[in-house]
Structures are given as structure tokens and as C-alpha cells.
View (cartoon, rainbow, N blue to C red):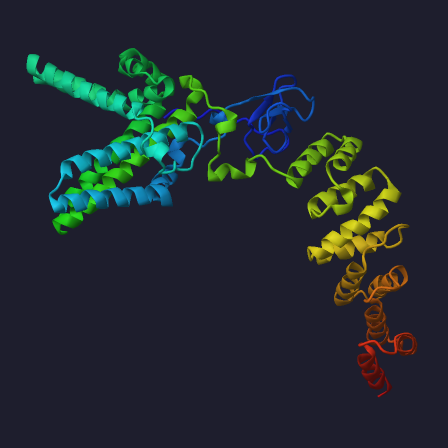
Length: 481
């Protein structure tokens, strides 16, 4: 088996395979790193540019991204077991069985069922060859649409059989047998050629089949070996596994097995076409390409993730000011909600020593962290920024920070959070609670009972009708004891 070519990886994410290569600087990138711009005239159509030199990119091709087919055989066997093809397999087998039992049009129904299965299998091959690993739908377009490829394939099978019988009858049987073996060996290549060229003559041309096989190399032999096993599996099941079951169960299980292995075989051929599309000369467009589940992390991001990835590239290029400008242009800073993006913006402001903007954003960043229940980061941010001018987190943020700092065994720092709340947000409903919490810390943690009493007595005078009054009075009574 030929070893796959070494994968080209992303410049900034070495663990990810590259999708794009810069035509100017030669660097390679995954979708997370490229600059994606929508064409003005065509909605939904994009251009991709190098994050370093801003020049156009060329797609490396699916072969650099997909896994070799021999490493993902388990995925091939799972393919027909997803909802859509499994329902098709069961329902068509049940239809065959019902008409067989009724002894009415069973042969015609069986023919129609297999035309339907071949049509679906061929659609699966074409879909896979484009890079889409999800099974096709069982709608009218798929099952009752263009029958051309299936009919051409039927003609292909018929011609092979006719030539075999002609050779076997006109010459020695062994000549016909050799031809049949050669034709069966080339059959997957012929089917692939039907997809590539959409031409029966091309599929029937032995030279083209041999050329395709040579371009795939030992990978073709591996594929053929698996197809041989898949083709013989239903017979093995029938002869050696199900012989002790009632005949109707044998019919039902073998019928489903035949359809199951047929869909797998065509899906496998489609994947081989995808993997070797550059050698074969088959074009796979990036816009049609949908990666397999194992590759999903490399899929192009959306929303804030796209901004974050672009910012990460600029940071790695040490273009800090450009990264700040990019965030300011792309994001409403006041309504920023993504903690990861807020963190990057905070670090950028810190690295570029924009102290005024830093304090203001740090307050908003801390609000985001508290809403996201990021206790450790929120407390660390408060301790780092509490002395900064303009650092004014929201009242709920400061109240939560006071609680978390107190729970972390930092009473002095907790008092600072409660104190900032009472001073900066003096009219907020949380102020009485902040005073009460501060007094409790004074008494319980800092052993400053006199200061705690002073705070509580001042609280009773300022808020005589507040709902917290009974709790304050009870706590004062406890303190006197």
C-alpha cells in the first residue's frame, strides 16, 4: 500500500491540516486563520486571503485534509446505519417481502427496489466524492431524479456479461473467464470514471481504467480487497450464519445485508475518488467540501470565533495595534459578551500600555467573567485592577467578587470589593447587603468587633425600614453575647 503524502499543516495551528496556501508567501493555513471576505456582488460567495500578506489563497485540496480510507473503515460501516439510509434499507426490504408473500408482482417490485438502492448508492458515491460525509436524503430528487448514471452502469454490467458469454462460447471457456476476472477487477475504476467523466464510452475504455488504477496505485488494490469482502458478505451470512433460521427471516436479513453492503461499497468508492481526486483529475470545490466528524474542529468559525482566530494570528505576528483596531472595528465593545474575546482585548490593551482604556474594559471584562461564573479569573482580575482609575465593575459583579474573595480566605480584599460597591454604586439596592457582609467580615474574620458594630449601627440608622434590618438586629444581639 502506498503511503500517503506528508500532510501540510497550518502555520499557526500545527496540529491542524492546512486547507489553503498563499500564492505570494507560500505559507499554509487552516480555515480558522484565513481572512474570509464576502464578495459584494454575490451574497454567500467568499474570497480567502492570507492573514500575513493579504494576498489571495489557493485551496490545497481535500486530499490534504481527509484521512486515508484504510484508516477509517469503521466509519464506512456506520454510514448506512444513520437514520436516512437505514430506513431506506428496512422499508425497501419489507416492501419486497410483502409482495413476495402476496405472490403478486414480486419480480417487478424487486427490480424497482434495486434500481432505487442503486440510485441512492450512486448518489452517496457522488456526494462523498465532493467531500460530503453525510448520507444523501431520500427525497424525490435523489431516488427518482436523474437515472442516467445508474442506467449507464446497468449497460456496463450488461456489456460485460455479453462479452463474457460471447468469448466463452466462441473460444475456450478460460478466455472468457480471464476476461471476466479482468473486467471485475476494473469495474470499480469504470464506476469511478462514470462519475468523473459522466460518459459511458470513457468507462468502457480499458486504457482509461488502467490509467486510473495506476494513478491510485496500491490504494486501488486495497480498495478492491475491501469491495471483494463487502460483495461476498451477504452470501457468507446466508450460507454460514442464517441457515438454521426460517426462510422468511433469511430472506429479510440477507436482503437488508445486500443493500447495506451495497451502500457501503459505493460510499467507499466515493471516498477513494475524494482522496485521490488530484491524481485522477477530478475537481473538488472548497464550497462543496464538508469535512468528516474527525475534522470538524478545523471548520471555518463564525461570529466572535472568527474574530478571535484573526486576532490570534495578528498577535502571533506581533501586530498588536492592528489586532486592537480589528477588534474595535468588528465588535461592539460595550455589548461584548464573549469571555475569550474580552480576555484577548484586555491583554492587548495591557501589552500596549493603554491604561485608560484598560481600566474601563477591565470592568466590563469582569462583569462578563462573573456572569459566566468564572470565579478564579474574576477575583484575579479584581486584585490586579482594583487600584486603577476608571475600574468600576457593576454592583452585582462587585458583590459576587466580595463573596468569592471571602470564601477564598481573603477578607481584606473582599472588604475592598464591598467598599467599592458602596462608594461607586451608592444608590444600588445591594448596598445595604454589602454593608452587612462587610461588617460580618470585620467581626468574624478580622476580629474588629468595634468597627463591625459601627457599620451595623450606621446601617440601621440609614436604612431603618429595609428588609435586612431584622438580620442586622439579630447579628448585633449575637455579637453582644
